[in-house]
Image 1: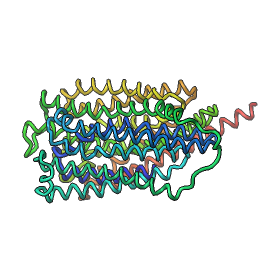
Image 2: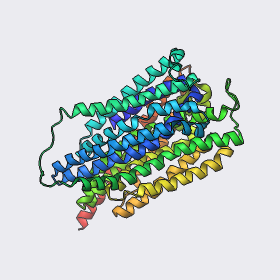
Image 3: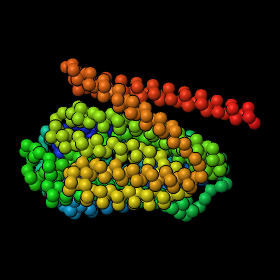
Image 4: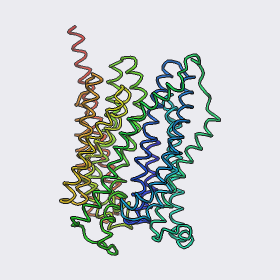
Length: 527
């Protein structure tokens, strides 16, 4: 989780200055490339890490370390090929996808630059899954931080070079005439460099990490391993594709609906009526969704940690351990996400003003949209560990089916709300989508695992979040009477709200623990 937070911070260090450099139109090129990259990447990579981790955890639990190493080898061979196919697919689709999605062939350069990341991502996913299955999270942590450092450094340097030397770069890109498209391609090349760096890190790590020994007689055949990997990874990968379809839905519906129905947003200076839909979509995808995804990326690591623990508990039929692990993962996700959502809900204008000082027009488009996304952020944070726990108890296809329902709700919501609310409607439908997903996922998990999860600790967190928001708002109101800067106002409000949040959590937890001990003591005396 610490490494995920650091990686997301580095991602913000990359994405926020990049948005300030490219602006709304440039970010539409960048987001177009990501919209194609993420489904292909999800199909070939996302399910892979979980599949390798699950089978490795099973092997390690039985002492079959030789089998775990063979799983790693087979997965590397299988999914390196899948990564190459994904890379070629993106290169072939680069130009037609760019023309069809945002009616601009110049976005093809950015798509082509990010295509090799699919191949390197497959190698990295196998290595991460192996170490996670062995309950060793350090390699994943180090590789995440390495990816973040390389992406921020290389991406921003390359983007700045293009902006400073456009004539030199455009000479090698004959079908690109817009400097913003070339700069977006250069920035996204930093993503490819980061995945290559992570793959190289794992190659170096192999030289120093000792191989486990034992259980060499118990080794599955390569065909059996390949079959189990595919059976586990494919449903997860397809469900991840469905998850990333929300980005494609936003791109097509936001641009299409605003082009057809128009927008109530004020026309920014220097943006024509034809460019306005792309400007609004680029602002929404580059700013609102970037801030929205910061916290869920951290809580996603809870799912990785819960996967191996829940798999071991499920295999040993230990319902007490399953219940305890589920409550810990879900409660941690809620504790992290609630104060973040409350803070962004209250201080969305100030946060965007601080993060994007040079893009005031783009930030203005995203203020209400970001607020509408906050409920969805909490829902998504809690859904991530739930998906991993569903995989751990053998419900590998459940996330796919649930995501299909949520994505359908997202599409209908966008088509109904964007004509009325503009881009804020896309944000609101995102929250509704993840709310539906959370409710269905929780019900399926509880019914399948046959465990009970008390609502009391989650209610205490929501109450603490309300107190946090009230204290932060009061502090902000008092600070506004002075000449304090936006940064100082945010920091002081955050300290006051965070302090109130922790105080309420501690007070209610202590009281709850005393009540539980007293009830247990009474039951013991009665017995």
